[in-house]
Image (tube, rainbow, N blue to C red; front, side):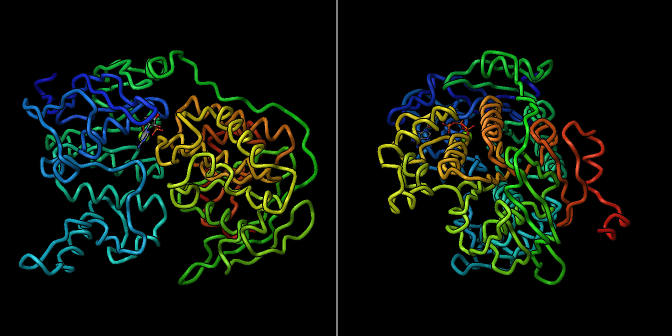
Length: 509
Ligand SMILES: Nc1ncnc2c1ncn2[C@@H]1O[C@H](COP(=O)(O)OP(=O)(O)OP(=O)(O)O)[C@@H](O)[C@H]1O
Ligand SMILES: [Mg+2]
């Protein structure tokens, strides 16, 4: 088997120290060519760190890397790129105000006679990549106009443009729809046939089993399992990840709901060029109720939440909090009235990377202090510590910059930050995106506990299992509209079929 999949890159006894954290504690890793090497582990286990080392972004504190049998030390990322190693980072690294083509060729611009940028050639190459990825994206579109899943695809295109022979994908599918994942998997199969060695990181365990040829499990900086994928099942992965085989989602327990806390009436968001992105959406949430908004990527769910938070001045319709009309049109005003949003894109909307973990958690609540409410700074720090503990955020100190946290732990800080504002209605966009299954259970438990305390929760998810397990009521959205309403315990097939409404049901309403 290793003859079919020769090992080209190895790490031996790799150690990585960060201030206050030993991210890797002597790892041995083999990267097989012409194969998918999957990497899995809890948030903060060291996956991204190990990959940044292979990609020349971080250096080992001690230990060795060999490439084709020879020891190497990468000077920087460009050095690794020159040796054929490409990486798609977990957090998007793109420039929203540049075009798709400019982003793809960033820092490796195609030139005419060495110095003029050859825009035409770049545009053509970008168009070909978009075709290969089966995307209908114009390379001249500013990147910021694309939804986050499409941006993730541009990030993948950027790595493909390098023709790397080792390609690292760090959670490439966290914002992709099922059909986009299928396209990516076809491309991965194709790269494999051409002998490319792929490293693939994901928290979606089914996905790993489907795509992987070899699996490595990391736990707290140590490799706890490493083998060919054949015969591996989810309990094996989970056991190596967290030391026990269970991954129980807390089930919905019946508790009485209170009065209506939130109502949306006929919310519309016009689309450029006609039609609606959010098309006459009306819904309500009661105190203590968890409403799941399920649908495919691009159904208009995120945009609806953005309308609630006053992020689209051109939207129309009416909102009510506890029966009273919501008149304020500022985000701060809406937070003040008891709304809080946990956004989908934590890096862009959720966190200030250069500020400390504590400052980030308390950020949205600061205006309460300024107004002289009852909370003191000390109380805030204590409350922040409380959330860190509740959400099992893995940190060395609250005072470290939030950028020093692993991707999943940053997501938990975003959740803590929203909860600190003590909302009446919590809006959550893909709350479990990028977090490991242990933390997911923790976040879900927190959601259930908050609901039991009387909070109304409206959450968006593309995960069927999640929406079924968590929701007291499920709303399905497709093409900007609510296309189905289901009680908890609904039949999964019915929920899925509401995401592809037929013509007749679209005309009704
Ligand atoms: N620049 C940094 N400075 C300090 N600590 C860091 C830095 N980068 C990562 N760490 C720490 O190293 C550990 C491993 O982080 P890493 O990002 O590799 O985790 P991960 O396995 O990729 O997790 P996730 O699934 O959440 O993405 C974490 O404890 C993290 O806080
Ligand atoms: Mg990571």
